[in-house]
Image 1 (cartoon, rainbow, N blue to C red):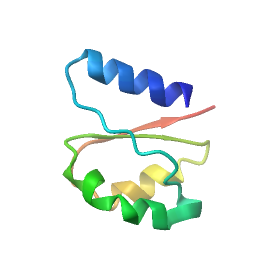
Image 2 (cartoon, helix red, strand yellow):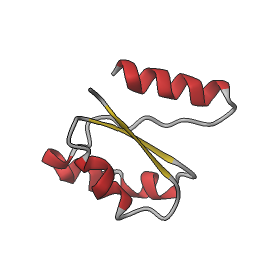
Image 3 (cartoon, one colour):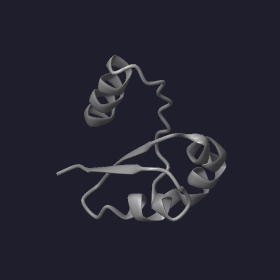
Image 4 (cartoon, rainbow, N blue to C red):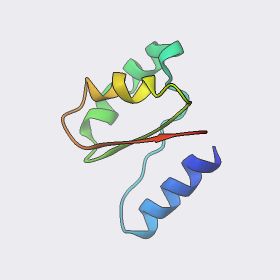
Amino acid sequence: MPVVEEVAETAIILGNRVEKIIDVGVAGIHRFFAKIDIIQSAKVVIVVAGLEGALACVIGGFVEHPLINFIRC
Protein backbone atom coordinates (compact mmCIF):
# COMPACT_ATOMS: atom_id res chain seq x y z
CA MET A 1 0.00 0.00 0.00
CA PRO A 2 2.81 2.53 0.58
CA VAL A 3 3.79 2.30 -3.11
CA VAL A 4 0.15 2.77 -4.18
CA GLU A 5 -0.20 5.84 -1.95
CA GLU A 6 3.04 7.39 -3.21
CA VAL A 7 2.14 6.82 -6.87
CA ALA A 8 -1.37 8.22 -6.34
CA GLU A 9 -0.12 11.29 -4.48
CA THR A 10 2.48 12.00 -7.16
CA ALA A 11 -0.16 11.75 -9.89
CA ILE A 12 -2.46 14.11 -7.98
CA ILE A 13 0.33 16.64 -7.44
CA LEU A 14 0.94 16.56 -11.20
CA GLY A 15 -2.69 17.49 -11.80
CA ASN A 16 -4.26 14.13 -12.57
CA ARG A 17 -7.53 12.69 -11.30
CA VAL A 18 -6.83 9.41 -9.53
CA GLU A 19 -9.08 6.48 -8.77
CA LYS A 20 -7.46 3.69 -6.79
CA ILE A 21 -8.77 0.19 -7.33
CA ILE A 22 -7.36 -2.09 -4.68
CA ASP A 23 -7.14 -5.90 -4.52
CA VAL A 24 -7.91 -6.92 -8.08
CA GLY A 25 -5.12 -9.47 -8.44
CA VAL A 26 -5.10 -12.47 -10.74
CA ALA A 27 -5.95 -14.79 -7.83
CA GLY A 28 -9.29 -12.97 -7.58
CA ILE A 29 -9.78 -12.15 -11.25
CA HIS A 30 -13.52 -11.68 -10.72
CA ARG A 31 -12.70 -8.48 -8.81
CA PHE A 32 -10.83 -7.19 -11.88
CA PHE A 33 -13.77 -7.90 -14.17
CA ALA A 34 -16.10 -6.13 -11.73
CA LYS A 35 -14.03 -2.94 -12.29
CA ILE A 36 -13.16 -3.37 -15.96
CA ASP A 37 -15.33 -0.44 -17.14
CA ILE A 38 -13.49 1.97 -14.84
CA ILE A 39 -10.10 0.56 -15.84
CA GLN A 40 -10.84 0.73 -19.57
CA SER A 41 -12.08 4.33 -19.33
CA ALA A 42 -8.84 5.56 -17.73
CA LYS A 43 -6.29 7.50 -19.78
CA VAL A 44 -3.41 5.70 -18.05
CA VAL A 45 -3.38 2.64 -15.79
CA ILE A 46 -0.69 2.19 -13.16
CA VAL A 47 -0.39 -1.34 -11.80
CA VAL A 48 1.35 -2.09 -8.51
CA ALA A 49 1.81 -5.83 -8.12
CA GLY A 50 3.98 -8.51 -6.58
CA LEU A 51 7.21 -9.92 -7.93
CA GLU A 52 5.67 -12.01 -10.70
CA GLY A 53 4.07 -9.04 -12.47
CA ALA A 54 1.19 -11.18 -13.75
CA LEU A 55 -1.45 -8.55 -13.02
CA ALA A 56 0.00 -6.07 -15.50
CA CYS A 57 0.01 -8.76 -18.20
CA VAL A 58 -3.66 -9.53 -17.59
CA ILE A 59 -4.74 -5.88 -17.48
CA GLY A 60 -2.59 -5.06 -20.51
CA GLY A 61 -4.66 -7.46 -22.55
CA PHE A 62 -7.83 -5.48 -21.82
CA VAL A 63 -6.73 -1.86 -22.20
CA GLU A 64 -5.65 0.17 -25.22
CA HIS A 65 -3.97 3.03 -23.38
CA PRO A 66 -0.61 3.29 -21.59
CA LEU A 67 0.02 0.92 -18.71
CA ILE A 68 2.78 1.48 -16.18
CA ASN A 69 3.85 -1.49 -14.06
CA PHE A 70 5.43 -1.09 -10.62
CA ILE A 71 6.74 -4.37 -9.26
CA ARG A 72 7.17 -4.50 -5.50
CA CYS A 73 10.43 -6.04 -4.39
